[in-house]
Image 1 (cartoon, rainbow, N blue to C red):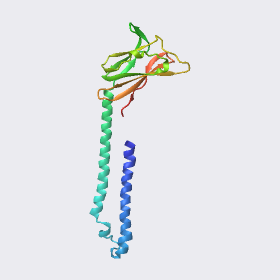
Image 2 (tube, one colour):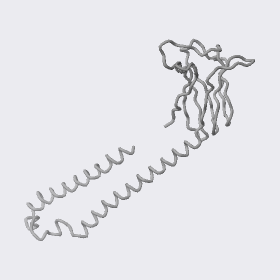
Image 3 (tube, rainbow, N blue to C red):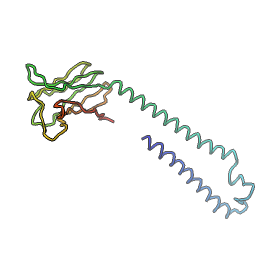
Image 4 (cartoon, one colour):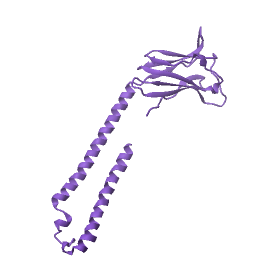
Length: 208
């Protein structure tokens, strides 16, 4: 949008002004000067009835510069608003960390995804079936809200991290969540095979 506004809007305005100025020039030259020779379009000093007065041209020039100034001011305000909105979005962004190994409790094997800062809403897990049901889908349920420090237990059907020969990493589950203003993100959980550990991908903003 920034490139469009800067590199398209001003050239279009320039072309439009040049286009209509050209029409006016051709109209004066081909019509007025031929049909009404007394106008003498190119006589000196220039005929004010044909070319306009200094005040007329002053108004045109001031209008053009005023339009450019207004556009630049508006563009700067839009950019400033976008920066402010982005900074606010980052300030309320829910940040998660993942346990690098698998634990066990009375309900089975699990690993955790923990919320480190800011409240998260509508936490939902989506399983990737490429790891032969590594995740226990019966225990996957949406969580309406998470507070700082809350840990989500993700149960799995093995106490060992699956290994895939020749792969550097394998995405096997995705979860989505929202911040307090409704911005939705998705993040992948993957296996880092070189370390035999679990890791999180960079979150991706969905509703942009």
